[in-house]
Image (cartoon, rainbow, N blue to C red; front, side, top):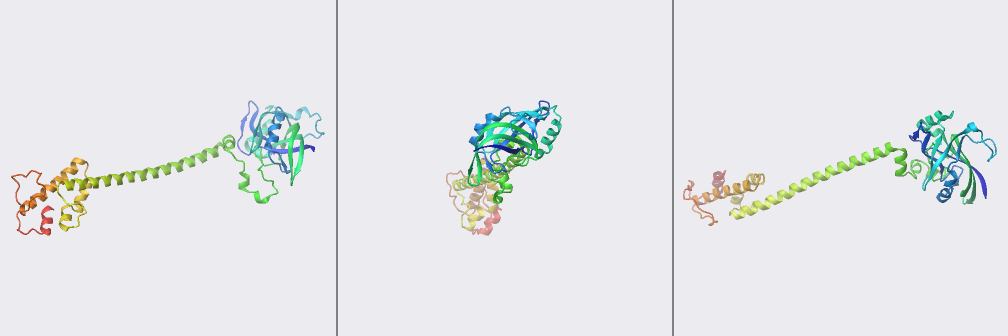
Length: 325
């Protein structure tokens, strides 16, 4: 069934990309996928109809005459060019208007400050069929005009797209439904401030996560260095005939005390570490010689000038600890 359709589509309520001197408002929406009249325009229908809207004349308000009748010259304000299809949104175009038209300043003010006040309404011939509870527009055969009107019926603004759910379906209304069809490209075109704020927030979150990971990595590296230092200390202690730091014997723990282990772990480099352990080994050998005990490391040279430590023949642990500390 072929019908004459009057369909409204308003502009998205965001700052517009307008050229006052050239008389262009770019990216306006001229037809959505659904209307408040419960008509559905499939993307394929819009794709085929796009050439029909190219260079379509734009007038102020609808004609009071029947479709196809001449319009008053003073009502003409511009043309539609560069029509393109956004599959999830509808038909978009650039609106070229006469900057000297009597309503040009009013149009620009509304477009920049109150885009919900103005929008497009098309007057077309279309092939319509009913499916379930809605009318499906299978083809647009002729575009009579695209008119500039106040209080557009389909949605809320000059660039606003109608969400895909019919308004009668209250279950689908609300913020979630209003965001249906929102794309990154639409944000780039119409709300770069929101896109920039979103990216800045994501960047801050990534930077905070990066700082946490860097701190965790630094802790892991310190733990690795500490384990490597413990391993090297055990190697040097064994090489010099000294007991392990984990040895259960009280005398051994007196030789390799917690304080001494802390000094070893804090040693600036390998040479400092070796020097501390060698000094402790010489001290232990000197004490052992004073007690008449042979040193367990015969490969180390003995000094003839080593002095025996005065003390009783029976050298207990307490006396040993007092001597080395």
